[in-house]
Length: 294
Image (tube, rainbow, N blue to C red; front, side, top):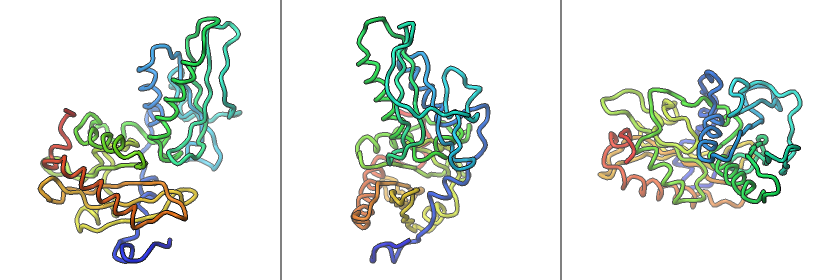
């Protein structure tokens, strides 16, 4: 990898994203991250009959397609799809009682992972515009929260000992809402009373993921990890020491932004540090991140 001068010469250049994708525990009972997202989405919309997502799962042979999430047949999750249907568009069923909207399932950088099929209860002759709008909003939300095919097939929860209903998770989502250019945020901190440092706030799941060697350099030594990554080198990650409001180092903050050949890496890194400072001002102490959301 080639990085710009000044900042990068003083930085530790490590494959943090690669480590994050490689150290994945097994999925139990079809409970993938995508399954979590579709179950959550359906619960918010009573007019939805089912949501099924098929796509590249990132853990098998390149190009393999499987069911990544299904509210109608959870037992099929991670089962291979012999003839994947990558078509998109909307269609009223032959009995006119259902409407199926098919949309691309993309990553946050716009890479096609697969297809989302959402079936709605439908009244004959009624407009389908509301169904399409709901489907598009769900697809956009899922893309915003998905880093890669491997991320789509992550187990959820990552570690059942840690809850996503915490102040740390609430802060992570506030930062994503405040900074639209922020693709990924991962807040690493140590639980009250000690133990291994884990992810306690993230917009791509992985709550409870233990800090790896690269994370620990940031956490223990105050180093900085900077990396260009992604399948097409279209992501820039900056991982910086995380402080609380008093300035005490309490962990690490991983941030990912879109990247291309014209990206000013120094400017993006400075932006990341500003987000870190904004976040730190909202953290009275590390223990607060593990408390229930306010």
